[in-house]
Image 1 (cartoon, rainbow, N blue to C red):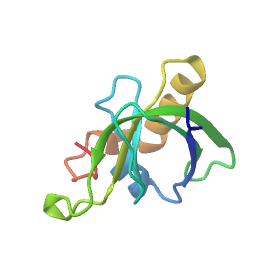
Image 2 (cartoon, rainbow, N blue to C red):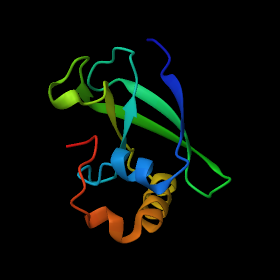
Image 3 (cartoon, helix red, strand yellow):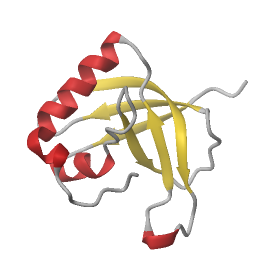
Length: 113
């Protein structure tokens, strides 16, 4: 079995985090721009850095959807990574939603569904 790939994801500002966050997944998740080809269900290990937060958050996620190259609407190629169901990740999700605050209900388009 191939080892899960490790992707460092650094969000320097709230707007980028907003565009990548996937509240639709019950446990939360993030869009990861990548030219690599993945299949649904593949394991991905994220090392996540949030805006104005020195801590790095490790997340063992799974590919839950794929935006292929040359997708319609000029969407960025990449994958949607669903967070696992565990306490560490629940804390991370709460942290992300704290950072986003009211922006999470914004009508601004995102890179996600």
